[in-house]
Image 1 (cartoon, one colour):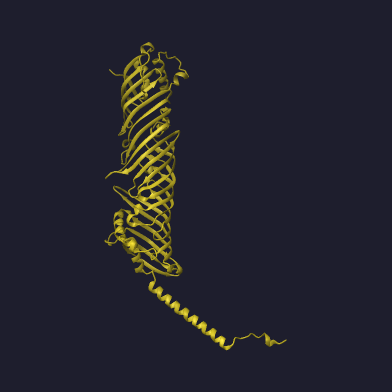
Image 2: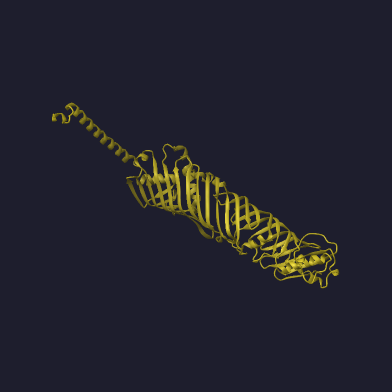
Length: 525
């Protein structure tokens, strides 16, 4: 075997020289390129204290200060501690916004494209009391800037994250409303393009947890109220006890779309233990609604609200608006085409057992101004109602209604009452205005077979005082069927409820005074 043939072949001297020179040239070019890139990065490096302050100030049309600044090279970016944002023309004023830590991170490839991977804001506090000043400054800073800047030269952000933010909204003569934002994430923040957001916060009034996902069109700080929004929300564990006059725990979900100044919202609510404070009887309340919300001033237009509780379904429409230098006022049109009177009495009255049962129809205009007075003294109602086929729940009262019907029809009342007399159904109708907790009946009528009454007067929900006066007509004179006095025979009127009809036997002038539990019925002179 010839071992000489196994020795490695070496390139010719001239070829080795060419490879060596190529390697040296490549190394030199790499060094030159690195030097040029390093010089360019050093000259164009965006993450310096002055450049970041200038960019943030221009973006917010404000004066920006840092308490700490640190540049990062791997990965490229910076960390800012104690950032404060103030009015541009009043840098000595209280901060409009403070950020505990602002972290900016990217990579060298995206750095050349002016793209930031992540911008994270932590421990943020916003004073919304100076929103007018912020809006004015934003408009001043945006005049002409949008035309002069181009999408090509702008910086984009792949993900902007805000964590542990607090927004305070001051109120006159009341503690400020505090919104605790757990996290707000904006995806693909690019000039001139829609931005996707994800939000989780604690709502202050009523207190509860809100989660929202959606998008808004390109940001325009000069006219933010006109920016279109769209998305979906969930509102959970909302404590209605924080609102004067009502209580319960509400949950809601729905969707929204439109400009912030006229945001269309539709959804559902579910409150298993809804109650009016003055009554104190929880009911299971469900609603479907469509509304228009002005996110700028908080005004709400209720286009259609369908409320269901017990066997009753009511419909509402109207608005909740703030009056000039006054509280918000709810102005509603309410209709119940076929509910149950016991459902309404259970919701609105203190009695554990509703005084009546039966179908009811009514329509009314309801006005509820805000304020410190009790709910029953603030609410104002104008409307009309009707019941047909109702009955009283107290056996004694229902029995007296049956006795009246028998006597009015010319029949004698048996010594032992049977189920027929106690099953007499009544009809009731009237027009009412409720102001300051006092119901004023311009017409109030009550009818049972053989008898009818037409009355007018007042009933106070504040102290349950009754003052009703009118006429009672019966088909047969009581003198033909009664063994006792007329006053004794008419104690059925203690429940203050009457209805419309016509009688031929006898007409009696009557009055009902006293209180709901201790009425006094008699003939007027």
